[in-house]
Image (tube, rainbow, N blue to C red; front, side, top):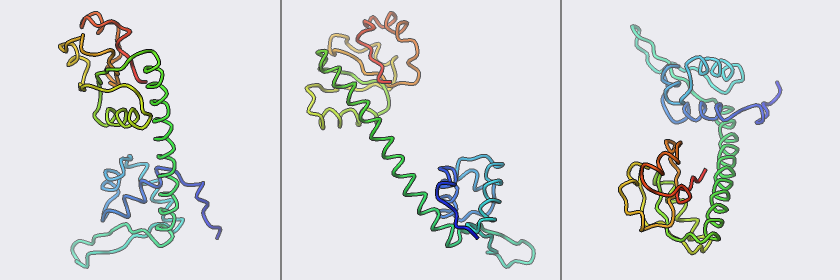
Length: 192
């Protein structure tokens, strides 16, 4: 039998194998919930994993009235999961580095245009990334405060900042917000 190439497996395979390895899974429904996949997709992948020898089904209850089964990774399944974990982590780190690079380029352009003092609108984790980039790139700018939504920014003193950095999925209509809040549209900068 030919050894499975790691190229044949995907991120969803890794998620499923990882869920099987980290939880005691006793049903496909439970596995679907743990992995974030549909029940049909889990059923399809489990059949494939069983055929490839990555997973086995084990009996864990010796009760004559109710027999329980658990899905277990085989040694081959553990090895495959390990290979996929390396690929998955490297892929996510590359994505993260590309995102940081794009955000850094945006910040450098903002600094070059004379902006120094910002407010941030969006999730805290993104603001932390921006603050880290400002520090790492030795940029002459700072984020003075953060808001979770554009609506929160509307009541803030508009004279206290050069521009608002916006990373809010609900920030679709900047011109309408600009007019409503009395903030010039060129001071409302979408990061993406």
